[in-house]
Image 1 (cartoon, helix red, strand yellow):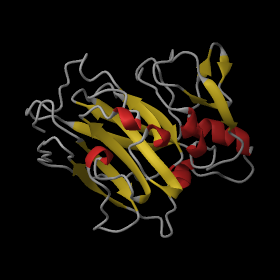
Image 2 (cartoon, rainbow, N blue to C red; image 1 turned 45 degrees about the vertical axis):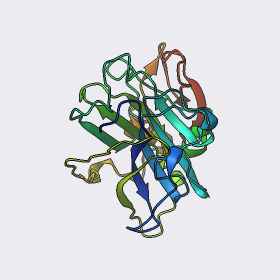
Image 3 (cartoon, rainbow, N blue to C red; image 1 turned 90 degrees about the horizontal axis):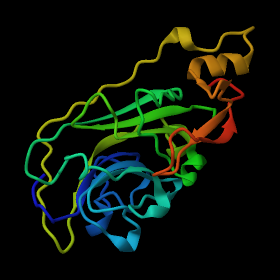
Image 4 (tube, rainbow, N blue to C red; image 1 turned 180 degrees about the vertical axis):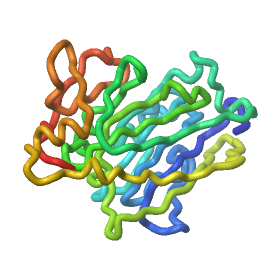
Length: 245
């Protein structure tokens, strides 16, 4: 991506509207307005009117299946605002590498993945039924810039269990090239051995599958969420894990 001081950025989008789905220009990064979608945006311009955290950040947005997606802070699930301070100037014209990873189950591991961040709004899409972990890596493939819990089945309505994936980008008054040099998609293949079996206590099975860890000596029995900038060692709790996915 080239255009220091330009805008507005690009996004990787999961959506159901078809291969030609197109959102709005300018500060919406090309995904704003797309229904039934989840967008991971790489934002390069500070739009104060929509609540951008700064002029260089990574964020996850969804309007769920009931409203159109938007780059506005009202649809923000998670963000990472420290690209500049960590030397990752994504609009410097150099080649950058990113990886977006979604796996079933909540793998809460702050020791090895410290950047946990999710808004209170994200709790709308965090349920014990179909819980997953979304991670976004940028340049450093060992430590994600975003770790967050999300149940995609509540963020997207997938009539056939399938969705389209691809990229969007946009500019407003500024200019910027958004170049995707190469990319690949790898589908997660579930482990049939992890399926619920009869005769096993559902709650115990659910907790085991989700690999819920201990926190301050006690097992986590709720869904933690972390406000951006908050201490990652102080989770709040939402829905309780009661049934298998």
